[in-house]
Image (cartoon, rainbow, N blue to C red; front, side, top):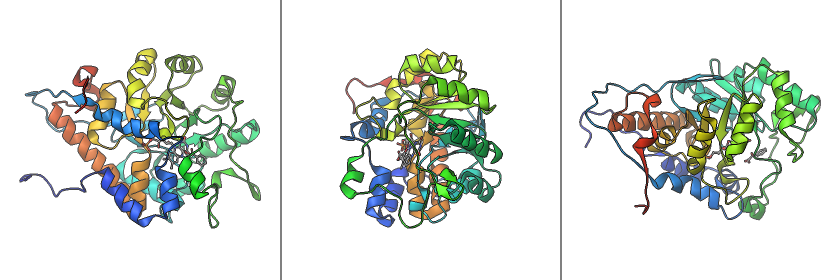
Length: 357
Ligand SMILES: Cc1cc2nc3c(=O)[nH]c(=O)nc-3n(C[C@H](O)[C@H](O)[C@H](O)COP(=O)(O)O)c2cc1C
Ligand SMILES: O=C(O)C(=O)c1ccccc1
């Protein structure tokens, strides 16, 4: 019974996954849900949060907690961003337009994927007021990469998120079994349009720190490096003028058997030492997961699949409901932890369980 609380929300992100699964083509569901190899990292991202316990404080006289954050690329009403995910038109006909409107409604940042099925200009036009960042896989043709950067700038994006965990494309067993290799029925990666043709997205193992240095020269947008797991790389990133990092293993879709992101977060946060914001994605499904990541050094988290599940379950409305559900969960968990602001969480509020529940 929750006598004085407002009407109950859907019980969790996992319910949206079940609802989306019922509506999506099973091959597309598998594409969104799946991971690389034996899906060990995919599972680890979620289960690692389950091995952490929160240690609340009491009697701190906290009123409504403050959720807002400010990052190099702009501000958000809560520390939960929309991670870049490809192919939203497979989840809803409005695709990334719907996601961007949901991000605008909830006043959070959406990171638009290079592999968006709607061109970044059209995403921006469909969602006035949306706070967009643009995700890039650096294309070896640097002239084309520069074109992409200019388009992102012109569309009003507040940061460039450069994904560095995809020197090659990870092999996902589900897609192999399903024979899912191409977008169906007229859908395209519209950001790759180059005159009359659509270029293929190139994953290049030849991309190096020099390319990051080059990017910082050609744009004044903050550069956010996504896919850092090694503390030495975190330091190198700072030396290259990167404005923020996202601790990410691509949702377990690239190299399998890398650690859960929340398990490496403390090391990365220590290596960065407050010199730049550190974000995390991977396995965030509850408000309590958000608190754990923030306590262990993240300035914000991003959610990938949860937004896709909202979109697949109920389009723009579903994406809004997922984001609002996470906001409500964060708010409640902060109140229950006696914490007044997302900035006040600290490592002492998280215990690593020797013997998980
Ligand atoms: C279906 C799908 C597509 C993705 N596409 C991209 C992409 O285009 N670019 C990128 O940098 N990351 C991509 N990612 C990784 C996400 O940005 C993010 O790292 C991951 O989804 C976080 O894990 P979560 O899904 O458990 O929240 C994708 C992930 C999924 C599930
Ligand atoms: O599926 C992915 O994880 C992903 O990152 C991607 C990137 C480019 C095209 C399609 C998917």
